[in-house]
Image 1: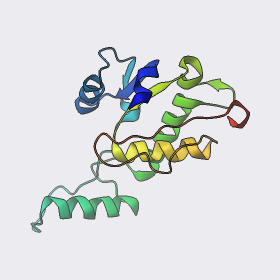
Image 2: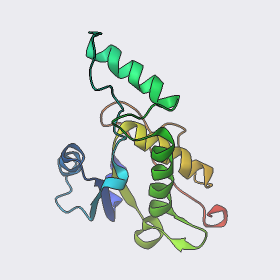
Image 3: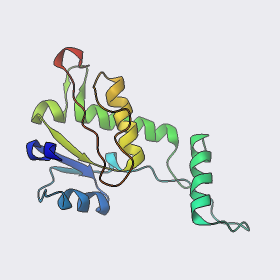
Length: 151
């Protein structure tokens, strides 16, 4: 994680586990902790007669979520929209200065699926980096943009 020594700005989700992770990486001062970077709230049923292991319910609800189910959670479409907003804030869009332009290097400490969706949006906006930022704990992706391809 040599890249961390060159970080000028630290952003993270406002959830405690994200804030604590940023601090565990050695950043006592967080510039912004915002709900924009939060993982999507997984939809769920209010209850019922079917008793299944938690892992099965999570898988079923996640698949239903991708198909449009959003009861008691955030809709997939809304999550993708929020990821687009987050990427635009991080990178800037159409001449609007983003955190990376303003500060040079930004560390985002977030959550798996949201990090993936933000990475997809950064790549769609012309940034380069891995297709998947890593889904295991403490995995990460480094993204950058040539000034000529920004936008």
